[in-house]
Length: 262
Ligand SMILES: Cc1cc2nc3c(=O)[nH]c(=O)nc-3n(C[C@H](O)[C@H](O)[C@H](O)COP(=O)(O)OP(=O)(O)OC[C@H]3O[C@@H](n4cnc5c(N)ncnc54)[C@H](O)[C@@H]3O)c2cc1C
Ligand code: FES
Image (cartoon, rainbow, N blue to C red):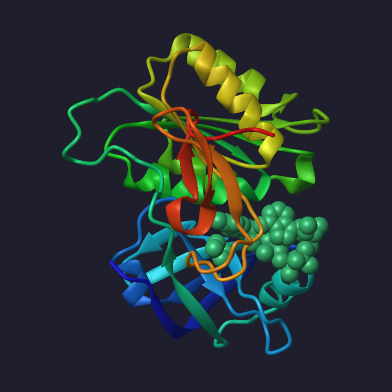
């Protein structure tokens, strides 16, 4: 289905923590076709030429939910929007989202979701759309960075939170807690979103367990539709040859075997 470009109103705006906004938009054209792992591209003020990519955190009826961390000019502008404001949004984008089991799936084994920081947001949409139970491990730097814990706890069968500094939940990286779950659970696949070093560690871990693994890559973007080269990354094809592809169009989710960590 083709992405739609339109203006959508913000119905609700709240803060998950300082610097992270939770926005719910009425956007039926996007909500009706969106799949887990896809994202939208948002115009952030008249001053910034390039749109900014934000993942779909959830889709309910005619609404889409976005979690925005203020890290620079564009995301700060977005973070400061209020209920009633209109946003100029292109989406849903990305042709390869998370292949989450649906009602046609014959495999009833659970899936494991591994999120790092704001990268946890798109995994909530996976958990909600999965036809099999989902477990989640969410990793954050410190206690004050933790978001979406209650929602994941409500949606998932098991949920663990880790903090690097041990100030909340389990101390240490997400991959240590994930390894524990992988030892005991009979998972069919792992889906992960976070920074590149976390994804690399998740790739190594799931390879050790011989499990299929899908990673959402976070690359800077220009057009969002495959027309520029801003989001180009090296991937490995089925013939094991390496070539460049567009994260925005061919991704943003790739299987572990496709991702070339440089
Ligand atoms: C497919 C996809 C989905 C995303 N989903 C979300 C989401 O759900 N919520 C969210 O808060 N953010 C998400 N991001 C990241 C978000 O798009 C960037 O934080 C935003 O574009 C930064 O723009 P800016 O103008 O605020 O910052 P800039 O001023 O452009 O940059 C500020 C800082 O952020 C870094 N940065 C900029 N873009 C990225 C990027 N794509 N990845 C890593 N670092 C970056 C810059 O290097 C710089 O250090 C996603 C990115 C992608 C590619
Ligand atoms: S952002 Fe332009 S090709 Fe991907």
